[in-house]
Each structure stands twice: as C-alpha cells, then as structure tokens.
Amino acid sequence: MWRKLIQPYAVIITIYVFILIWLLSLISLNLHFLNPFSHGIKDYEITDIVYSRMRNEQIKMEDRIVIVNTGQPDRAQIAQMLDRINAAQPKAIGLDVLFSRRKDPAVDSLLLASMIKCENLILASELENYREDIDEFQAISGVDSFFNQYARTGYVNFPSTETRTIRYFSPTENTAEGQAYSFATEIARLYDPDAVEKLLKRGKDLEAIHYTSTANSYIQFEPETILDTTIDLGPLLSGKIVLMGYSSTEGGDCPLLDKFYTPLNPRYTGRTEPDMYGIAIHANIIQMILDGKFINKVPRWLSFALALLCCYFNVLLVDWIEDRYPRIYHPVTRVIQVIELILLFFIISLLFYAFRVKLDFTYGTLGLALYYDVLLSYESFSKRRHQRLINKLPRIFRKEKSE
Image (cartoon, rainbow, N blue to C red; front, side):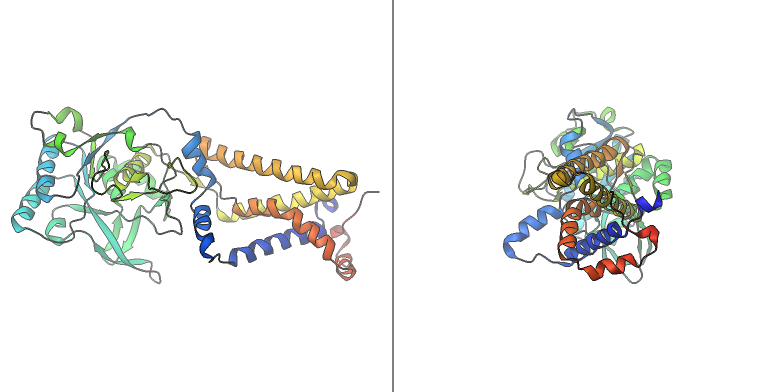
C-alpha cells in the first residue's frame, strides 16, 4: 500500500508546484494598468460571496442595539442629545466622535457636564505610533484629557491590512499606558461582562468580524427625533446599547465620512463605494460578542498541510489516469481540475455558512490550478539523469507503472 501512495514522482511534482507558487508570490505587479485588477483580487475572498449572496436577505431586527446619527459633529447638539439619551436609562452609551482638542470653552464645559452625568459612557479614541519591536502603541489620541477624565475610552482603529475591506478587529492592544480595549469591546463589557470574558479567553490578537446585520437591521434615530421633547425615549432606549456616530441615511454633506468597505458589499469585486459606516461595523462587532458567534479560522499550518496533500494526491490520480486511459488522459484531467475547483468553492462556502469556520485555502487553490501544467512541464523537460537520481531512492519510493 505504501509503495503505491509514496511515489518520488508525485513528491517532486508537488515540490515544484509549491516552489512555483512561492516564486509567483515574490512577483510584484507594479504596472499601472494592472493596479485596479490586483487591488480587486486582494479585496476579494470566497467568503464574501457567502455574505453578499448566500445570507438570508430577510431583515432581522436587532433589539439590543440602537444607532443614533449625530450628523456633522456639533458639540452643543451632542451635549443635548446625551442628556436626552441618558435620561432614558440605556445600559451603555458609545459616542463614536473624536474630541481631539478643545474649542469653545462654554460649549466644551456644557458637553463635559453632560458626559459627567453619563455613568455608562464610552468615548472613541485612536491608537498611534505602533512600535513593532515591543508590540506596543506609544500614544492614545483622539480625545482631549479635558473630556476623558470622566469617561472610559475605547479605540476605534481597525487593523491595517493590504486590503480596503474591514474584516478584522483587535479586542485589546498594548499601549505605553497599559492595556487598551477596543470601542466595541468596552461597550460590550458594560452590557454583558461575561460575553466579553469569553471573547478574551479565546486569546486571539485579531478576531474576524462575523457580519450578521446591515445598517437597516438596527433601529436608527436622527438628531431631530432624539431632541424632540414630545417623544418619550424611555421605552425606546431603556436597557439598550445606544451607539452615537455618523450614520446618515440620506447621504448628507459628507456621505463617505467614516465609511468603509465590508464583505456585505453587494459588489464583492470591483468595489467603487464603501458600503457601511463605522458605527454600524461596531454594532456588528458588539452583536457578535454578545451572541458568542465567533468565526474560527483553520490554522495556517493545517491549511498548508491540506494544500500539500491535495496537490500530492492529485498528481497520483493523474498518474493513474495516464497509465490506464492514455487516450483521454488530457481532457479528463482538465475536467477533474474544473470539478475540483468548483467543489472546493462550495466546501469553503459551506464551512463558513454553516459552521463559521474560515478556511484560507489559497495555496491549495493555486496548487489545484497549477499541478497539471507543472507535471506536463516536468515530463517535457526532465532528462534521463534525473530519472537515474530517482532510481537511487529506496524501492518504496520508486514509481511503478501498471503493466
């Protein structure tokens, strides 16, 4: 059995395939006309199709989280809105507006007074000056000390990646001032500390965001509604998480302010316009934490091992087909390649859709696409002395042809 499964020919082809993949990864496509194409590929993952095409289109309202649009940041208006919202006794208030410097002393004092009244307020901040050698951010910015002395802060940064699509968030980060929590994590801690404890026990530096809702899945209020004293906000906001930030439903003066690309974008390739405001992304993260529905990624070493095995056994399969059906060897192999790639797409999609398991099978996909051409090239250009080297291997490694 081992003599049939362990063949030097298949081992060599598999090694060549992954050497080729490695060489291709070193090639940088810097040609100007190829830049849009290369960016589009980087921004795309198979699981994006699950989000944009396979998810349930029926809108399911999330009743624990309410989004309040602050409009263009106006500190006097935000102070009034905070007073009204706080009076409704929500369980947590998250204010995704940066107060990086002081402005009008009278207005700032009014805003500070409103903040002091809110015992469950989380302000937005930003982490800056990351030092990779000590894995630490050197500064927390975005909120002046005049404001943050009476409220907790949470950073709103999303991890930097090569793509423009927001797929991950970091629950905690090390800073020169100690451990810092993300904006969404801090808010979730106020609402359900046990849920956050489960998140932190996972011990992951980065968590993939499980997008379950669009902005339309959350109850949203405009500033005029919040400031309307004829409306009793108690039944609408009591015991809930209230997220305040820019979330215009009508475009407004700055339609792209704090707006990002997400996997929910219906155009999962060639994206032109961001599809979700930052406040809605934070809402999705909070919802994921509270529900405990995290995405589990297959370890990279396991993905690579599966890719190696997949490529190796495909080479064995092709070798077997060539021995027994030489006349239809080429077309059958090409058909098998196409079928396998289609099956691979559905397997990856099913794992993510049904079990929230994310398999990055990039190497495996490239291996399936390249192994047959590498095999043909090897057969065409290999010389007899190479075969003599193979024959020097122990008998168990020798390739045997059927008679």
